[in-house]
Image 1: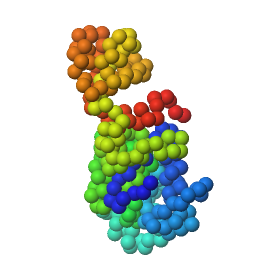
Image 2: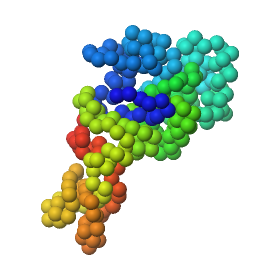
Image 3: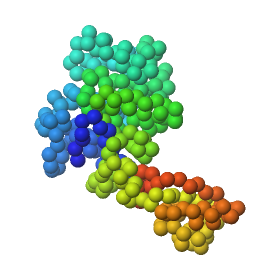
Image 4: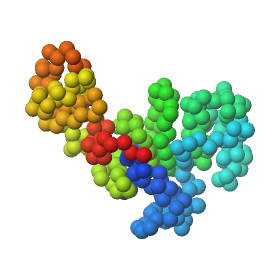
Length: 280
């Protein structure tokens, strides 16, 4: 696969599918068994070190120094790139404003909330003014408010012309941010394209989720007949249809069942292609 300048490209897949391994390969941190990898027009891992000078990375797990202040974390990280202190200090105010941390510049990182730490990690990844930013599950563990703030910051980066490679388990996140996604499973790419195109290609437009103790009986008696495809997971049935009206008319008379009618989304594509079984 290849990234286009200025786009957000998403890597999706179950646990163990190869997302983080792909990022490590692209960064030149591990050697490929075969094939060629180019990072910002440089072959990696052979020229991985100079290529990474124009790359920012937000890892899955925060690696902020708890003994440093917010400002000091940015200063020390900038020095890893060989940047002069004067240049680093000139960039810090703008990055703190970008991350919404201007008032916490002198705070130790151990006093920050989870959302603040993730925003600081994002700001830290931008200290070298990278052309390409790798984001490995940047919003995992955040509450909805913090997640939306991160999304807003990432859209700002895209508006600035930055290129983003994103891995995430949140399909809504990928739909909101990514112009293209690739779904991995067991180390292989099984689908690639714009989220909207993948939804249209793989999933019926209407989804009716049905909940209740008697849902299995209802699916066998009604759901399978009135939908193109019906799946049961636990106490939930997922009915996929081009015309949802017959399903909704029937369900409106079912007092023992609850239901939700929605449009198909990227999560439906993901589950259809990779299955609903739990991955460890």
